[in-house]
Amino acid sequence: MNFSDNLISWYYQHKRKLPWRNTNDAYKIWVSEVILQQTRVEQGLAYYERIIAKYPDIFSLAAAKEEDLLKLWQGLGYYTRARNMLSAAQEIVADYAGIFPHSFNEIIKIKGIGKYTAAAILSFAYDLPYPVMDGNVKRVLSRYFCLTGDIVNTATEKELENKLQKVFDKKRPSDFNQAIMEFGALHCKADNPGCANCVVKDGCIAFLKNKVAELPVKSRRTKVKTRYFYYLVPWLKVHGQKYTFLQKREAEDIWKHLFQFPLIETAKKLSWNRLAVTPEFKNFLKNDHYKVLEISDVYFHKLSHQTICAVFVQLEVFSGLHDEKLNKVPIQNLKKYPTSRLIEKYLNEHVFADT
Image (cartoon, helix red, strand yellow):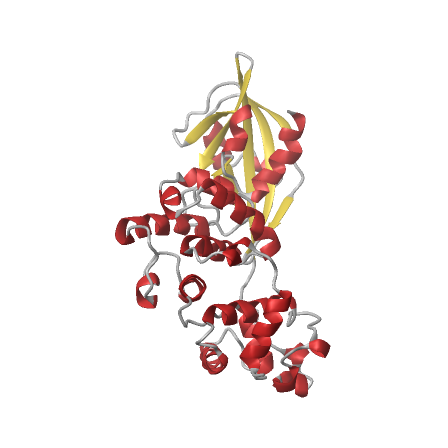
């Protein structure tokens, strides 16, 4: 058997039972692919099931409120995916009557759908001959052909595409794409690949040259920066009802359109005494009286390109805060608002645990 036959045969025996593999519904396949970008299957499965349960088709998703979708997405990260998914659903309903295009050149025009997602939808839903290229596929091909170029370079990317076309099974595009991705995820793993019982090892040049552990070559170019967030958590009591205040992030930055407590970001770490005399803090309270209730330990939140060092300062305030961008929220309604995982963790540990 050739490369394709061996992989597909392996796939039939070892594939995981996943709900999006039991359908040719382009909508459900697309939702799964968006979720699985930058996300492990084990983590993404529960999100897929929740989203499909609430929005079973493209029309229900297109009619969704962004806040509701972001709340379902909470904790998954890379929230741009959710916002783009909503925009794309609205576009597909408005321009394509709710039907995903069968043309690669047409489907790739839709917001948030790149080359990989387009190929995945077209092959899995319509069995059209478009090969997918994700991290798992790159790893399998780099080893099988012993490609020593850096996979983040354009030249190596082109070489990988050429190699993929050589082994791609145009008669069974869906099976081939599923097989090579699953093989990379479960067998030809980054660490401790199963070379001893590999179904394609006889043709794997890296295996024959004992270079599997060295491949693929990938440079780390992302410079990680540190940011210092000071969240002000104000509490106001009115006739026995406890309120706090939230604002919606609007900047082109992480967590856009998620809700947060009033935030002061500084260039370096500050003590409470120094934070309390900053113009930002004084402007936030506008001379209103307050009482410090609690200052949290530092919460570290690591992202791919930055590390957030966050401190939460709980304050008792004695009058409403005069900022039209702030939402006055009863404590019992806090869980309804989509927030970052960082804030969710703090709330679970310091607010909801006491209610």
